[in-house]
Picture 1 (cartoon, one colour):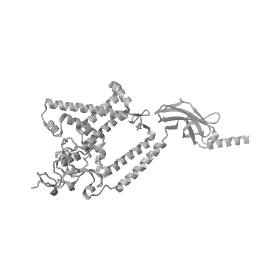
Picture 2 (cartoon, one colour):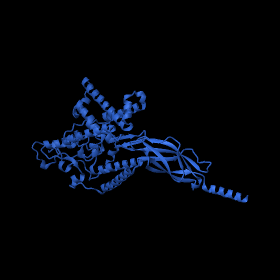
Picture 3 (cartoon, one colour):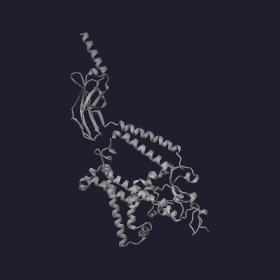
Picture 4 (tube, rainbow, N blue to C red):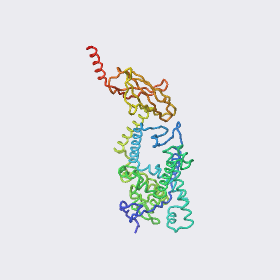
Length: 483
């Protein structure tokens, strides 16, 4: 008997975290140790500093990142985007999705394991607190199955108190990304009765994050996250993923003292890779949608290989074709297509960003108003002028008539548009009848800041049909001739 076993192939018939009766199997992963875990820890601290600090960072007075849905304003790296820039927001979103698809086709779910906020918070914050208070994975399992005692109650209550406090902090930070740090400071420093809506939002966000990190955990990745569900259509045999080198590792089995590895696989079936997995899978079964590419199994396996005096890399970043056929990473036609689409989208985004006006002026005829015929025979229309200022300075603006010849008068308040703000006024446009050649003609208005032209805006001018006017004049001439 060699103890070498054939690998089971029924893993796709079940979930690692659900038993035969459909009950959840709680995962108690062993704490990873290794170079990749250390690198992920260092990266996670940078990302956490960015996540908590970004709403407080200002560029020219604007937040670095803020998604102010309530006021329909978005700040991305200090640039403000209004609803008029929504097409840019859509382009950026599409480019981001294409980038994720391209990145996944080439490098698998690297994003999930190294950058995703869910993984960062779960594995680098909440899980580490759990290790600190309750011990490593097996000790946590023992504690959960032990009867309630003063020590267990103290550990559990302390853990959940810290978990909720952290969730409260995350929820407030998340809220700051929406309403801004100034509004958040008002909510935090005032009585809840003065900001009941904000207070309720804060409680809901805190509760959702506490639920996710204290109980829902890996199920957010395996059951909810759409990115994980799309993995099967985004990956192919050339994608770089966390992979088990089955050619080197099989046939696996427990190792005997002094056993020669030249006649068997290098995998000693110690399950170290399974014990550290935060989603409870066995990576030796191949790529699975539950795998978040956290690299914990690589670190665990490399430590075992080191003890066995075998080379590391039995589990590693690699593609199926590279392991099975020794082929190097290849840029597939699908990757070329994704790259082409992404290049076009990025080119469009850069073009629109560079050519984007810092002032957006809209001139619309005042709702419900009709044209007015004046005693001198000219026609007058009323307009509502709305100006959005995307700069960090107050803009005192004036308006000039460009075409056709006529008179423009500001009848509302002067236009002093605040920085990153909006201002409105009402104007009248008066055009001599002889300059009107259609009942619905075009008017061009110039927006000026001092002597500097900001932009020209077109709008419509409504008046009587010029043909009726000529007919009336002809009738008058005919009556005069008859007289």
